[in-house]
Length: 141
Image 1 (tube, helix red, strand yellow):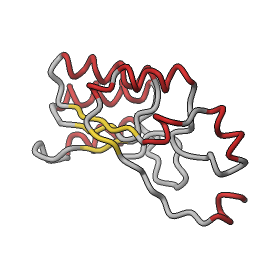
Image 2 (cartoon, rainbow, N blue to C red):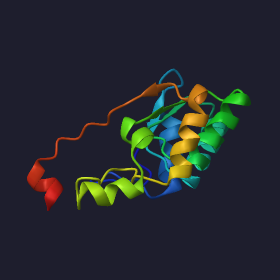
Image 3 (tube, one colour):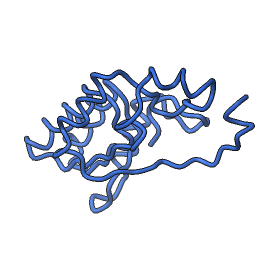
């Protein structure tokens, strides 16, 4: 479920739509979500209300990893992943890479956010490269 800005038109804006997904999703299947910032907390609330396991894709910010760890400590069935570019690049690097080359979703974030990913490493379940097939021309345009 794409719940924040992405490069396509797949974003689900309505929380009522999210709730319908959670209601109808099989209990033995994980719901994968692209949820950033406060949306992460909203998804964890729905996971708790509907008693469904969730996997948060592409965690990039301090507030996201902190709320995920808190949810895990309360016993919520939540897993998460982090992309290598969020562990090794920040928003400052995006300008060095050039227009388009540092454009990712979630966007590259602050040094503090990156530091938090390293601090909360034990709460990260896996790493995902999130490869999307963009040509050099697309990235430079």
